[in-house]
Length: 452
Image (cartoon, rainbow, N blue to C red):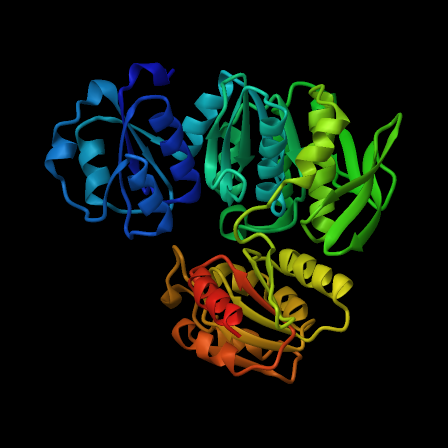
């Protein structure tokens, strides 16, 4: 059994990943020496280096690597990296080399772990649970899959009694965790390159649910069959915990929250979307079970600022609205576009979408086409390949996907041309959406709209 306390040095192969960087920050905050490699320098790696973490961007066996001793060094890697000389060096020299998910699992063994799983909603929910824990001053650490606007980080150290983790279903990583409390937000088909079909991914979530020791500490969105007793939650329908009476006033969302014994009226926050109220409902339910009073929770909900690239909204003096979101699955796009249409029914919507992975584009092409057809105009970017190669997915292109979209106003664009095309369009609301490098459009768009 690996004992993390025996290691003084931690080397991260792929340190710039969102999950890897949270772990790197954890060990750095614990006083350990943290080093790492990543392929490219990003805002996240720059932030890590400014915090004192040593990162290189070339696959070279340097003095810092050769000076490490296998007895007191743990190497942590992400499965996204398939081949690397640095990783070969550590394996050849018999260092302890573990996947990120395994190391996170070891951390959760020694804490009261709150794990949030789901093909959609897990980043927002886990970040919100962490924010509520912070506002209630609970002794916790969190490991998030997005950058909290409140923390300005994907990691926070406020003690070790509790851990809040985003439980990633990719590569069945979440089965390495030791959850004492768990949330399952959704079990829609995704990552079919790993699971093969919807039934298999649902079985993966049932295996995750089975890890939770107490029925009353497993929270599952109403309607999901998880194969064991659990607590349900919902929005606009009765469940064990539920919220209703949603309304929008002056760009703020109000809702009422129901426990089995009482109703707490008029929670208010600035995070749009029915799906986000659903995420808030289960976060409130868990913190209520941890003994936090509703006065504290109301204040905490009100000052929650959200997560970068999760319905990040800007309203400009011109009246134009810009929304940026990480959605990369048809269900997620439907949730974002549906919220926009609900709260701004008369506004003209321009969507700029970058598909993520050839396999996901192939598997959900009809769903993408349907969700993208709900706007007034579409700019479809080329598919972001991530870990995949175009040669393995012949015919799966953005041109192929665009043919399925029923809009009249639709076109293909490269990422480098997209900004100039956006500036030529007539829109009330602009939505940029996707999980690749479409985020590089964010700053130029904000600056342009701010100056016009």
